[in-house]
Image (cartoon, rainbow, N blue to C red; front, side):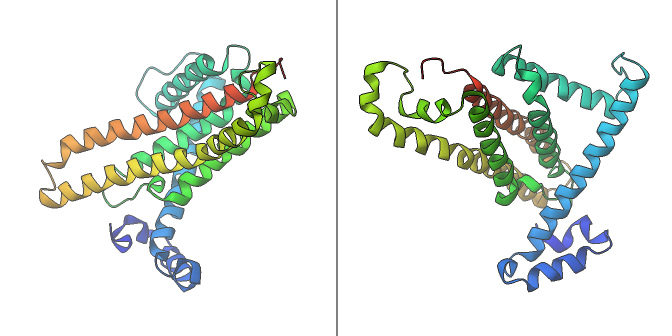
Length: 252
C-alpha cells in the first residue's frame, strides 16, 4: 500500500512526521512506511485506552456483564478468553500475576491486526519492529520472572533440563542447545506474527484491486480469522514460556 494513500494523511502533523523520518538516514528508504506504522500503533493504543475506560466504568457501576453489543462486550469477551487461557497454561494459583501483560499484548496485537482489514490502513503488526518489540518484551519478562522465582536454578536448568544427577555430564552440550532455543523464541514470535500479517494483508489488497466490492469479501472473512488466530498463538506461546519459567525447579 502506498503510505501517502492512507487515511492517516488526514491527521495533523502526519506529513511532517513522514518528512522528518525520510530526512533521517536510518529511515531514508521507508520513512513514510515507518510513520504509518507508528501512527497506526498510536491509534490502537488510544482505542484500547478508550475501550478499557468504558469497560471499567461499566463494571464499577454493575458487576453484571454487558449483554448488548459494544466495546464493553467486546473487551469482556476477549479478556475472559485470555484469562481462561492463562489459567490453563500457567496454573490456577499463579495466572493472575501474569495476566495483565498477556491481556495487554492480546488486545494490542488483535486490534493492530484488525486495522489491516480497514481500507486505507496498514496493520502495525506487519512491521518487524512492532512485532520484535512485543517479542522482546515477552522474552525479557519471562526470564526476569524465572530468575525472580527460581534464582540461578533458572539458568542451571538449561544445562540439565532432565534434572537427573548423571545428566550433568551432558551440560556442556545441553546448555548451548537450550540457550539457542531460548534466543530463538523472540525471533520466532516476531517473524511468525509479521510474516502472517504481511501475507494476509497482501492477499486482501491484491484481490481488492481486481474487484473492490464482491471478490475481497471471502478474503476479509479469512483475514478476520487470521487476525484472531495470530493474536491467540502469540499470547498462547507467551503464556507457555512464562509458565515454564516460573515452574519451580526443586531438583536444581
